[in-house]
Amino acid sequence: MGSQQPLPDSRKTDIETAKRNAAIKAVADHFSPSFRYVGIGSGTTIHYVVDAIKALKDPRIDHIHFVPTGYQSRQVIYNAGLTDIKFDSLPKGAMIDVAFDGADEVDEDLNCIKGGGACLFQEKLVATHARKF
Image 1 (tube, rainbow, N blue to C red):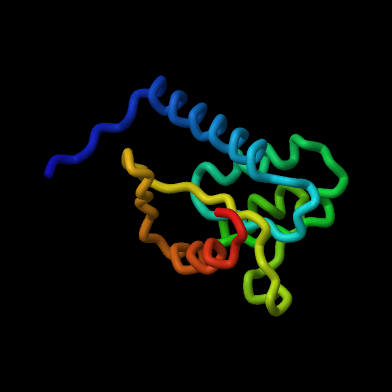
Image 2: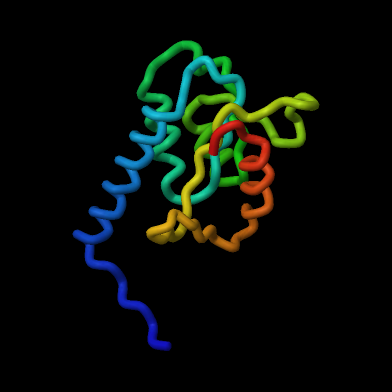
């Protein structure tokens, strides 16, 4: 196996634009300011999701508890001025209204390949406790 060549700057821009657009669409289609708990996954697309939520400028967002799946997503939530809650601090029986997360790859049958990083277990916990993922 040879080493991969770095992506040209224009390709990186295209990828970031696609991530931003996907995040904006996901928030528009699946987020409600009336939610109580929202899962926030890990990875490079998540800050676009949080930005899209903040852009709604709805005061009800201040009452939502965001459930991060790792340190990075917790920092994104915190830096956006949103309220985070650890998964194991959720009230007994509470469901996460929606969880946003990305995937490294998606095939034509919509099978997702997730990263194998340290957040994978926490991502699975949040996803299985979400009404919508």
